[in-house]
Length: 193
Image 1 (cartoon, rainbow, N blue to C red):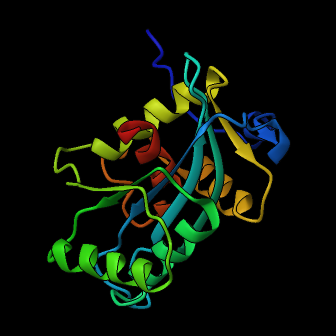
Image 2 (spheres, one colour; image 1 turned 135 degrees about the vertical axis):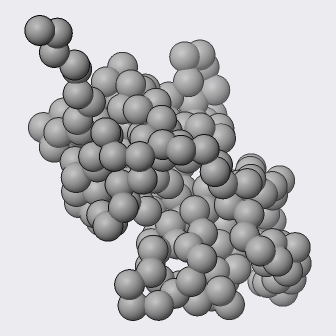
């Protein structure tokens, strides 16, 4: 009988990928990626804003610097994105497209102008509607972690991210019922950048 290999993130392997900020190449590109939740109720998903730097030398290395995640109300999401842009100075911001995304874009631009913050290039992406899309993204992230192409800059976000990565069930098409918003933001990073 043939056994099927199962992809699993483990804390021991993930811990080996932790680096200090001084290990991030100075010439790397700073980016933000936002995985938006559809609502902000007590049982809703969280909106996750991931800050990373991407090495410019091939093969590409992703340095995840921070993940800001909470059940932000729709009016707070632009504020949190601008606040992260001020801290990390991204050259590119990618945001999951929600209904009325044009209003979100306008409010982000307004807040940034009001605070005199340079945003860099901002674009919106549509969430995939394909079955098991999240599991496919997580498999890509897993492969890159195994290859050492993803690094985690030491910070407060790591425990939550590692817990969600280790709890992710790859053979579930949706991972329904398990918090995975922070982990999925990392998978979206390697998918969209």
